[in-house]
Amino acid sequence: MISIPGKFGATCDGFSRREFLRLGGAGLVGVSLADILRLQAEQAPGAGPAAGMAKNGWGKAKSVIILYLQGGPSHIDIWDPKPDAPSNVRGDFKPIRTKVPGTFLSEVMPKLAQQIDKATLIRSMSYTPVGLFNHTAAIYQIMTGYTPDRVSPSGQLEPPAPNDFPHLGSQISRLRPPEVPMLPFVMLPRPLQESNVIGKGGTAGFLGAAFDPYYFYQDPAKEINLADLTLRKEVSKERLGRRETLLKTVNDAMPDMEKAVGKYALDSYYHKAFDLVSSGRARDAFDLGKEPDKLRDTYGRHTFGQGCLLARRLIEAGTRVVQMNWPAVANGDPTVDAWDTHAANFGPLRNLHCPKLDSGLSALIEDMDQRGLLKETLVVALGEFGRSPRLGVSTSGNTNSPDGRDHWPYCYTAFIAGAGVGRGALYGKSDATGSSPAENAVHPTQIVATIYHALGIDPHTMVMNHLNQPRELVQAEPVLGLFS
Image (cartoon, rainbow, N blue to C red; front, side, top):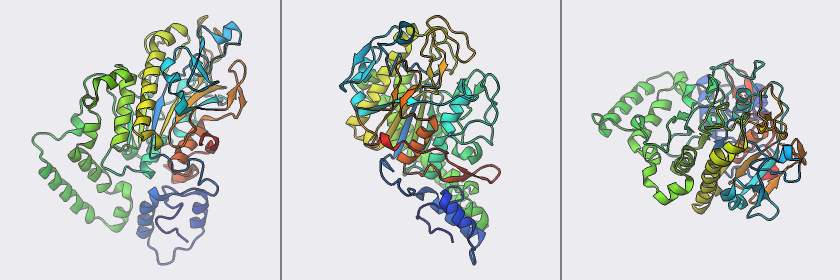
């Protein structure tokens, strides 16, 4: 038996495990393959909760902002200070009180300390490396929910490939397309990158390029070029409309089979493109000049701050997923722009990185809360791992200065807010030195599952890979305890 469109768990692009088994054993008498494919296409956005999941944050989010702090920021020096630990663990920074009694942040995050009452800190993020000790492989894991097939001893991967697992934003934009003519998934202001491996984990992989994010690789703190979202002077809306009508005529003439497979039908790409360009909605969303100077100053007149403001504008305009990558190569120079603080930790954090993170993140949370957007937008900020509790030691084969910290996936912190997530809460707990979780360990793939859950997508929905094999969106359970 095949599910009726709109009921839970359908599509060959999106079966639940239960529905996949039901359909696989069913006799489809009198139903053509084209009919099946058409039903599947209609059902793609309609997946519902599995048994026992239709509560605790299910479907509370309409959109998600991922602030990806690529490079691995130090949890002890930012989110989870350890003032009673030995000096070679606690480091140079002192803890400060926050708006939440009993919750402390590092002194380099004074603005966020006044907004932490709107969010939850997960202080028990943890995973065992198994080839994921360096950036690229760990980035791939948190972006796709899967570990890569092959990892070199250095932890680096091959460049992006068509058989990669899709970025979670690509899956979301396929299953939950925007309700208005708008870019479904935007990634800015630079690609995911370690050394010369660029974009790994940041594509639609086996879903196909149609579900890739819109790569907005420009500095939002500078003048923005939006030529690809602007009508050329010689092309009027009427002329554009005539082109769309012609393409529709061609598409209508296709055999039923071709029309049923939406990802091959012309209108699945072109109609959306026409709407985007002709409506001007996306173009307007990128215009930060429409924001008051005072608000732009509050976010911070730097790449990260203006990127956070742009993320809010995109969500407001109807984008489902925005990913703001920390504007640096994951293993870049910490004295310039990177969180990878092997060579120097405290100076760059105090003077460069944390002031930007503090202004951008705190302004985003306050701004979205005041506008009512936080109720239906999940905001997640995290890196691929934390930094070693002990200073000056090598945990990943890298060389570290006496005040440097190495990679540390065994325990770190993630920030999460909005869409029913507890306000002013702590989830999990690290031990006395921030070395391992003391309570409620959370694997990075559980964050992926939680994002799907908040958007009303069963994390165990089946998708078909490049070999036409069924794969779950992610093999992990959402952290239901995060939701109030």
